[in-house]
Amino acid sequence: MRVAEVAARLAWQTAAWAGRAAARHPVLAGAVVALAVLVCRHQGLLDSARWRTDAVSLRETTGAPLERFAAASEDHALTRDRLVLVKAAGEATTEQLAARHLARVRTALTPGQLRDALAASGARVPATRLKAAMREHPGFTRLTGDRYFLGRPALPGTAR
Image (tube, rainbow, N blue to C red; front, side, top):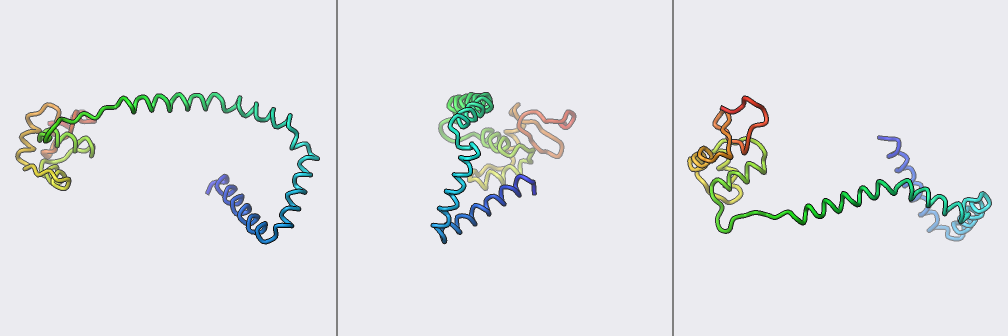
């Protein structure tokens, strides 16, 4: 475990213990809080000018990262809003079914494996039809072992 995690767990356990003790002895807990406030005030920790300067310092320190985060979040939201799902009306073609599944799994499959995967999702397509469709379409690349991949292979020399 990291030191920060140990410190956080210790602080959480201490706070839980203090909460249980305060619930059992509310008068004593009130006296302890009052004493802590008096000590903090005597040490100057409750001075409003000090709080203001600390808040300004915190704002200056975290301002730039928060602005970058806000800009990135806004860009992400705009990009997400501009996304359009392109799906043809009606039944998907054999090529579309194969391409969608291969894009999801991001691995090369044989026509038999692809047929089984499509059958599990409810689309019944024979392996011979898948093989013919993928062989004819330029978006599929045939790899060794009669496996098909969507697009170009990552490693040069793996296509036949």
